[in-house]
Length: 227
Length: 227
Image (cartoon, rainbow over the protein chains, first blue to last red):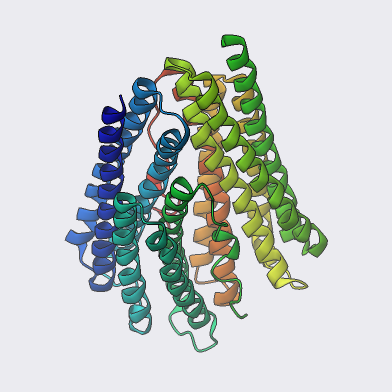
């Protein structure tokens, strides 16, 4: 029983890790499609979301089977319950990459972004990819210290997000309202992607230590945006 | 065992329903604070989110205790697992109301909204409140037909959201980029609130019928926004 539980739990953790990795690489390609107005790449991200969504279903079924067949208790039960919660976060990370790709596709052959904000999105994309990889690592290793460091990377994302808003709100903004609307949504998608990666980290910290670190989205990235 | 399970499951469903109701009334007040630039009301929504967050913790603990002590199987197990997933949705609904209130507070004593879009937010607020109440009803009654109708209300929200974007994107928009950025975020918060209510409905349909209806956020509210 215990051996079967351990094996199945490791499989579930690997599957969740794979999903986080897929979400990270989807965000990487979505960012490229955005920066280069690359339609084929947007289409690829959009098509491949089906795979993440399918894996979500598989992961939920596996977690359910673990509960039904192994009836885990105490810490083991907490691991499976956390796994169920984590599915929703990594699925959402994939959906946010999908949303970025959809905006790139909608504006094609035009570029969504004026050149002056390209650098922000290149950097937000880089952080998102790092967070996807870190979430994958944390899901497999269950290292609570590594999990806690996800929050530092999220802070870098929040800083970029704030700066991005100050660029938009600046009186010198010359690119009109439509571009600002797209950029507002895109910025929100990257920020939420990072929040979900942090949430994965929190869940892993919880299942290892039994303590849930405080929530992060309360802060709300643009709280100090000027007007 | 069975009696204890039934009692505890009913308690969990009531608690989730209470959370959905609180999220709906938080969105009602957040909308009022937005329309009337009412600082006291924004502050109240912000403070009361702590209550929703606290109930999320209680609901998760109860679901966990149900699994640990009653070791439910089959349909009963599926109900508890769905309950764990629903906690995240209703908590998020509360957080989205909080975000609306925070934007209202940040711009106080100014109004966030130019008068011409007040009507959109009044109506989106009305639908959000109805969706919160419907989610509460569905959680308690487990009526799959009522749950399926949540999607119609969500469609009304999506329509409003699309129209709102066409107002923003219009060349006649005279209220500047900063207002457009706030409105973009606010529109997104209402749309996501509705999506989470639909998700609650989907989960209830699943636990009653064993079939999960297809996802809705793929559609992405502003897909047909003009530019």
